[in-house]
Length: 334
Length: 234
Image (cartoon, rainbow over all chains, first blue to last red; front, side):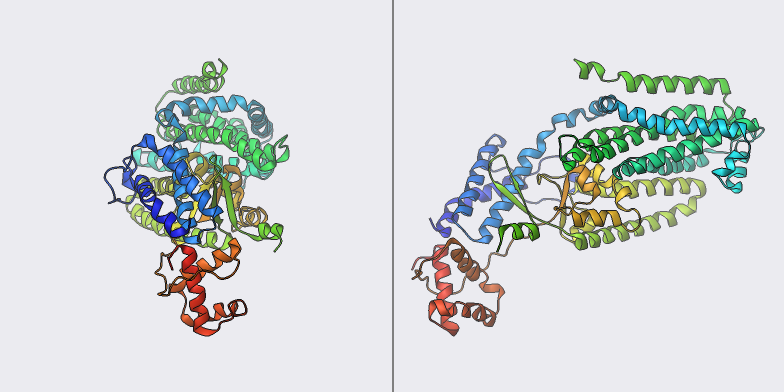
């Protein structure tokens, strides 16, 4: 059969296929071009797989018979579009995205417990070392920060100031909220992305932030500023510190996939690691949103009794730890 | 030509579907992707400057707004467009590029988020040097983010124009033709509209030793065979 005959025999079915693909009843219309074509699909969706198979057959024939590039391109394009239509609807989890997010995150954390522990060590090890060092030696902090930033940091938490930092109103809270989002989530993304450099980037972010935060805590305690510092940080500490640690864990996961891919090719190992890492990053981003919210609108309220703040802080630590240890375990472990 | 050499320098990316069909896409290299990035970058810059100028009127509230939108635009912009606009940010759309999963299905939230978060590593140490280096060294022009997410950037296929055919009579080929010969003849006649007659004649002259014709007659002869191969009746 020559090309013209082939085309005239099947052209109408290809056109129907095109119409079916152009037909879009679904969501996200807001972001799509207004399609003026076809209000009705030319055949029912149940018929689509068979139509697609027939089209694949047409393309295989056309290629085997050496038909022209125009035709092959047209059919190839249709097949690609049909392939997308048929296979991209794979995830029926869409309806349950909230619950899969709620449980996917802690499940991914537990499945990668060794990276979480490693990351915890890489962060809290330097943290406690530096905290103790700065508590014992008041000069120690200058090994990490310049005199300017040290005095700035000291004045922020100086007891006797009713508001921490400046006199804060709600506009300041919103400004700080923006700052915490931009800064902290940015750091968490870097902690993750740095993992691809054989884990070195993540290690750097963990150790550096551990040292830095530890230095601030130790130094302020040694100055006797603890009564303003600890009530301030207690509320958001659970979400913020653990989110940074978890982002590091996601980074170590992909770094380890390159260093030791096991039976897989490095490329495959990397992609596998990316799946779990994505869950973890979704989770840490949400944790840091919580943290920024608490830090901006709750931690800064100096009129609240420290005891209340400590209790809430401790409760949140409990919630975070319990969530990471147990959420979704019955679903997974059955 | 050697097959291995062709495979090594060819940028055609082939994926086989479960139906046994091979889908093809043309991989995009560093230069068009850099250009697309630059366009996106300038676009973001303009939007960001506008937001900053607006935000400056509102003191601290405005600062908060600036920082929030900076974060959202810095990290969300590519993901937002790639997932909701069929794999194309405005820059990619201008350059006719599309991001796809490496099985040539459209990117989803997970793959788009992964590839764009990894930008933080790709842009190190300066000016996307790591990203460019991995793109050059990986077979599918993938930067680090693409490798982790399992995505590729391809050229969007343009429809070849369906042109008119020359007004010559179809001619039954008077010689043995291999499938490649047939494709060449058909391609020749289908490009009738996009070539000047001089260029067509020049190309046809290559075959004058086979057809034993020359000049305009030679071109017409080849056009005639091409039309017959397409299915025109004599």
